[in-house]
Amino acid sequence: MRFSKLRLNGFKSFVDPTDLIIADGLTGVVGPNGCGKSNLLEALRWVMGENRPKAMRGGGMEDVIFAGASTRPARNFAEVSLIIDNSERLAPASFNDSDQLEIVRRITRDAGSAYKVGVKDVRARDVQMLFADASTGAHSPALVRQGQISELINAKPKARRRILEEAAGISGLYQRRHEAELK
Ligand code: ATP
Ligand code: MG
Image 1 (cartoon, rainbow, N blue to C red):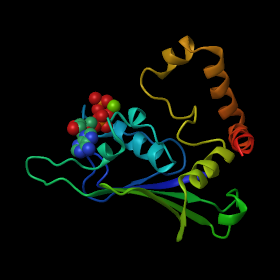
Image 2 (image 1 turned 90 degrees about the vertical axis):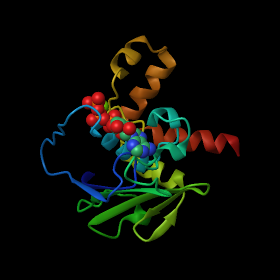
Image 3 (image 1 turned 120 degrees about the vertical axis):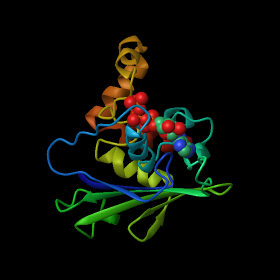
Image 4 (image 1 turned 90 degrees about the horizontal axis):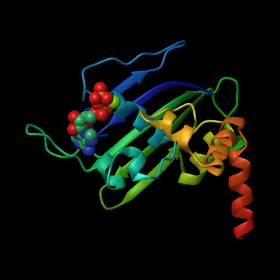
């Protein structure tokens, strides 16, 4: 699965619609402190279903919505869309009918988050599963936060095992087993 574009609208400091084109090879993002580099990575994690406000450096999920500045009023919603190159048809069967897959997450004040894959309304879980099965996602070890390496070194074995399972691509299976056991 190759990410080809990330589109932000009203997400954190990205108040105006912004496209980040992810070309083949390595993409570097440079800029002064506070210009929004980490916000970009958070947008990527958020659209893949991140639901822990702390992982988004906020107190509540609505903190990802542009909060206003001296010259701009706050926004009522935030939207991030991730465009994936699906020409190798690696997406789950129910979404696997086109070369390009667009995943959209939108949060509206007081109304929570809504997700779409293409034109279909889906649940957070569907999006999380889509990425878990592709060995990526909001908790993917490929997304490394500042301070995360030392956290990993100091982690208890159980937490470390979860990271290894994510890397091995079996966390989707575990999630399904957990749900089956609850039923
Ligand atoms: P550094 O180089 O210090 O790591 P950075 O480029 O990673 O900086 P970010 O942490 O991505 O910067 O961006 C922080 C900026 O985003 C701050 O200016 C902060 O005010 C702004 N910001 C965060 N959340 C919101 C929000 N909800 N509304 C408006 N601005 C926000
Ligand atoms: Mg940063």
